[in-house]
Length: 158
Image 1: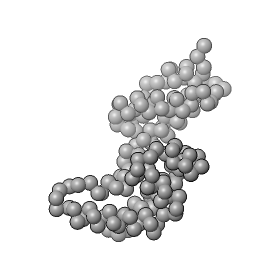
Image 2: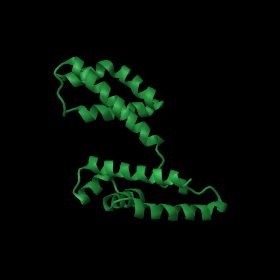
Image 3: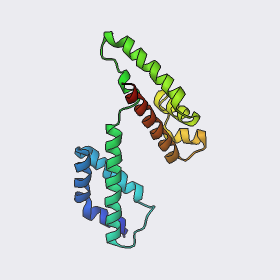
Image 4: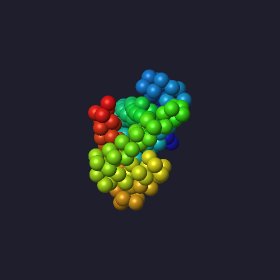
């Protein structure tokens, strides 16, 4: 016997798909978002009514879609260092040095560690969280704050 959350998901799947697609403007990504949103809720929440299940699903799909769009839109801190041609080597080197100085001067030790492990060494956030004995959401928040500080500092220099 399916639970209220599953029944609501099946019933309003097309509406949820439309909401995710409206935010992301990509049908394939919207399908992924629906699955992610459902899996985040499934087994963790037991809504009291079908209406409550629909509201919960709608809210989570909206939030997960917006987060995915923000991730897609945000520029990685090393995005300006991509090679555009042979004449840009000095400019890339200058930006890289600026970035290293900004990391050293603007970020606290935890943020420096997270940036180094995640951006340079490609360590997953869960692994970093274990190393720092922090919860993964706290690591994501510190990473987000560090990126924001670096972006602000970068825009101030222009």
